[in-house]
Each structure stands twice: as C-alpha cells, then as structure tokens.
Amino acid sequence: MGRAEPGRPRHRARHHRGRGRWRKAIALPLAVAIAGSACSMTPPGGARTTDADVAPKRGGKPVIGVSAIDLTSSFFVGMREAGDKAARDYGVSTVWQSAEGSVERQVSTIQNFVNQRVSAILIDPLDKNALRPAISRATRAGIPVVTMGNKVEAEGNHSTLYRDAENMAMVARATGAHLGGKGEVALLTGARGNYVSDTREKAFRDTLAREYPNVRLVSVQPTAFDARKASNTTVTWMTTEPGLDVIACISGPLCLSAKATASSLGKPDLKVAGHDGELDLQPLLENESMIIDVLTGPGRVGYWNVAVGARLAKGAELPRNLYMPSHFVTTDATAARLKRQGLSFPYVTPSRAERIGGAYRSEFGPSLPGTKMTAAR
Image (cartoon, rainbow, N blue to C red; front, side):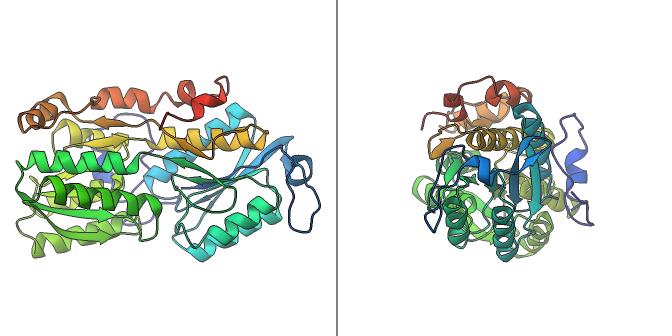
C-alpha cells in the first residue's frame, strides 16, 4: 500500500524519527473500501439479502476486503498498519490485496470479494471509470462500496475524499511565491484516470497559469505512483531542464525520490513541494528543501477508511461523500519568507503535523459519533 524490491521506496509508515530515512526511502523501492451494510438490499433477481447473509465472519468478526493500488510503497504500507489498528479497535477483520498497478487485477479482486460475500470492501481505484461496473456489481449484491480517496460515480458507493483541488492549489501558490513569481517547475503525477492524481494535477496547472503566469511548468510526468519512475524522470529532467527550480509532486514518495535523485546528481539546491504529510518528508521541511506539504498522512488515511468501512459493515448510515480534514505543513521560517512574497495561509509546523498524524484514534475512533467521520465541506 510489503515486500521490498530493489529500487522501490520502503514503507514510510513508521512513526519514529530518523533524519536519514528519506534517503533510504528511494533505495527500496488506495485502497477502495467496499463496506458492507447491515441494511437489507435487493440484488439482481429480486431476492432480498441482509448482512447476515452476505457477511462472512472470521472469528465472529465482519470481514472487510481492501483492494489497494500497491502494498509496497511506504504510504500504502503505513495505511495498512493503521488500518489494521482500526480493525482491531472496531472489532472487524481486514483482508488486503494489491492491484500491483493493474486495473484488470483490481477488477478481479473486487469480484473475488463479492463472491466471498465479505461484509465490506475498500477500494483505491486505479481508474475511476474502468471500475464502475465492478463497483455496481458489489453494491447490487448488498455490499456497500467505499472508493477511498476517490470520487467515483458508480451505483450506490460511498467516497472518502480530500480537498484535493484546494490543497494542490495552495501547493502551486507556495511554489510560485517561493520563486518570486518567476522560474521553472516540473510536476510528478500518479496515473491518468486516477481521480486524486488528475484533480491535483489540474489544480496545480490552473493555479500556476492564473496566478503566476511567469512561472513556467516545463514538464508533467505520470509515474504510476512508482518512486523508481519518479527517479528516472528526475534523471532526465536534470539533463533536459537545466534551469529547473522546483519539482512538485502529487504524492510524497515521488518528492522523496526526486529530491534524493537530484542531490545525487549534484543538484542539492533543487526544491520540492508536495502532498501527503509523511514523516519521512519532515527532514526536508525542516532543512527547507521542501517548501510545503499537505498533511493527510498514511496513518490517518488508513485508520479513517477502515473506520468508515467498519461502521458501514455494522449498519451505520453515513453520507455518500465524506471528507478528511487536512493541514498545510511548513516551517515558521518558510512561512515568513512566503508572507514577504504576499502569500499567507494557515499552517502547522512539522512537529505539530507529526502529533496530528499519529493521533488518528482520538480523531476517528469507535467511541466517536458517526458525524466525526467527515469534516464540513
């Protein structure tokens, strides 16, 4: 979301400090939740089905199937670790499956979960359009579906969402202000067709073009959320774009990889700006190699999504669209410099972000009412 492979980033879910972790992250190289409901639903054929019929039990617990984009990248590993803590807290069991970057594999995994009659399914969709039929089959079978971090217009699914457009627009503003309104920027994205990646890319592009027209976006490169591809792309940019000032990223592992690669190629002054709020990014923020980050955090994301799935599996009624509170992260010194360039925004420091990122039980735990599962939009 783990196996380690050469060239893949290691899991950044660990919550201990370590100044050198980000360098290790690139050396080793969402999960959609389809959550079952206790409410009766009518599948094709007209027979009414209840949770008692569709929900298998493991040791007496409802089972939540999770189809993740990946289970090796540090963000997804962190999600899984915190998600399993949520499962224990909520009295459910989780089964995690990696799509390994394949839409076909993800569709097959969802169908297997339906055939196994799990209580709930969480899905991190690789493609918001290609998965609609599989999601609709699951909901028609009486299994609520949660598309995690993605807005998917399928039949009856829930979506757990971030303020992707607003957040990435601020990343663009911070980048433009850092450059004083003039410079060269490149952007590392995830995968075409992925809602989160597409939304963040569009917001970054549009905001730069509208508010910082003299900041040139020289290249946008999809990476399939793979840090190795981010590294290879950075190698190319160091040759083809010698005037590059900042690499922005729609996800933290891509920034980690880009920064380490640029430094290894004699470009230690190249800055990054990104999203996700992982602990491995903290040293880059503190030494001002990173201009801004956005805290969603793998632990918060994983715990929150399994909490939502568990509540739905046990019959809770929740809004179709749920939103996670997020926070901009930067240092006081960087914020002061950006303010001198005319940009002010609410932010938390890296140390404060670390505390928030680890407090997911108090933020989304089972003792809280269902209204706490979403922020006001």
